[in-house]
Length: 474
Ligand SMILES: Nc1ncnc2c1ncn2[C@@H]1O[C@H](COP(=O)(O)OP(=O)(O)O)[C@@H](O)[C@H]1O
Ligand SMILES: [Mg+2]
Image (cartoon, rainbow, N blue to C red; front, side):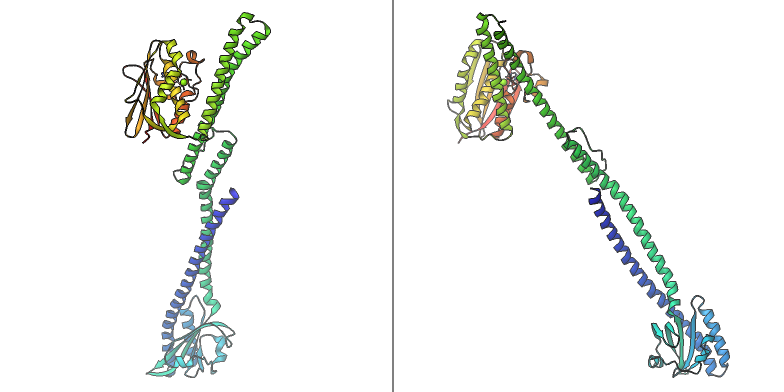
């Protein structure tokens, strides 16, 4: 992950930031150059004013040529302390009269014709940027300003600055701009690095490593990310997922241990009985009795295995329901008849209360039979001897409600939460022989698959009532 997301993010951010700084710096440099040149231009115009005055003095014959040269030199130094500028005064045809720089005295009396002389003659100021000039042997930035005296064009002033000299202060500013940009880019990269590490990469890395641990079976591991952003939310959802994974894993362990336990006890008894018979410890005349006990245990095992298979196929959703029209009242009567022996043994009073003989509902016949059998079996099993059981059906808004009531001991609060759990038996000592603790989970699974519900109620007058619903057939 480190080399993937992290480097991609850093690269993307660095490119974005560098681009923006480069563009800003380029604009800034360009703007500054223009600003600097325009400042320079207005400075030159002011300078030209002084030079013009000196030239007019000369034209008027008030000062000598040497004096003019000296004046120009002083002006050039005084007005341009930072940048060396050379000044020339020329007549209308470009013949040099005077210059500020003694190096160029040899040009005096010579013609420096500028191709722009016509513009200058028309009274325009001409500016030439960065042109290589043969006379000066270097690239110069030239300003030519016309001199008019008493309304006539008398000549021109030329102020030259070496391009190198002009560039010098500009270059300093450029360096400052670009170095700041580079520093800003580097600083921004550090900040990005730090924050993306702290905000995204580290938490993601932690979630990833915890995910791997959970996959290896350490389901109690959790992510410790407390930020309140999306990553924090992700970590929270991840922990929720880990919680439910842990619950599933614990359920699975508990289930396996329950199943093993449930299977071990009948197998132990069967082994004991048969071992006793084989060893001759059990007297011959008691063999039959112990074989019948073994047979009961095998029946119990079979029931347990069948229930488990039912439950697991229902939970896996493999079970296909064959929904048909059923006469639920008739099914209830038939189921009660199946329990006749038990009812007689416990001397129970069993009532069925129907509004009519037939009540048609929709359901899978075998599965609904299983529901009825389990519930009626429970009612008979958990009611006291001489107690009573009442089964009733009623119709209400497109549904049939089937209630199975017995006046036995009520279910206490603790059991209420658990009776729908697999293998849950409230009174472990009393019911072990008869129960698997799978009856109610199976009932609920079947009804859930029918899209129906079941609930249990401790009745005020005593006793327990289970009620479930089924769709009425129209
Ligand atoms: N009619 C009932 N009256 C009282 N308790 C009941 C009744 N039906 C179920 N229970 C309680 O619910 C538990 C779970 O029932 P069940 O899943 O059918 O398992 P089993 O019948 O094998 O014990 C029972 O152990 C019992 O404590
Ligand atoms: Mg049961």
